[in-house]
Image 1 (cartoon, one colour):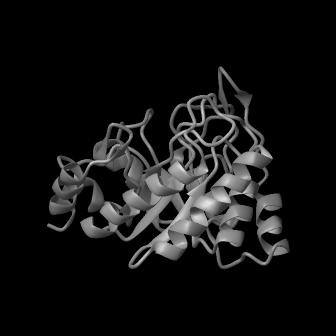
Image 2: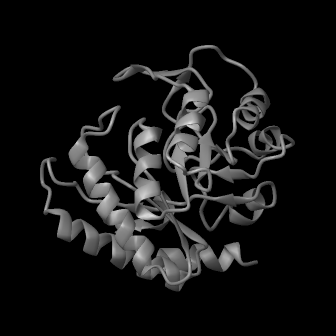
Image 3: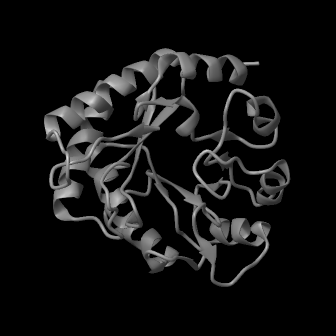
Length: 243
């Protein structure tokens, strides 16, 4: 993960040039640490908006493009929080990124502060085709952290539906950031023909056990120090990932 500082238009922003420099500095550490890809998010645009503002789309495009241009060894992806996968796809297409993450794809879910999220996987796939971005992978969370299912169903059913609706991989999280999914949850999410990724909670203590049950992980909390990648923490994690 590359967590961005507040972007222009949000409190405490230090401007777009600062955000670009922050992102590139984190990219360099992650590349040196040996990761395979980076995912950039507007993590500290607080409070989050459900749909992206124009200013956010513009800033994310510039930052993501800078990461694509500066990358020496990793693929780059992006996600605009909180729930605007079309905006994420538009940014990725304009910036030359390889993938997007969407927290809400096939599951009807709600959060107290936002209500029920709009989902329309068919429209998202159609939009990807409309803008000529079929090469951009959609990594889709199923039953994502922080939210509650409106119509509960087994995790394996969500994974199968995500597969049927055109996701390129499914992401499994715990209940909160830093909370890992269980081995059983990872196993339930497999078998649909898509790669299964951990979306929260991977650390140096559980890496060997959890990675044996899936295809990869997106890692933020365990490697972050003061809202940025901590190289010592990254090295510790990667020493266990490589085992």
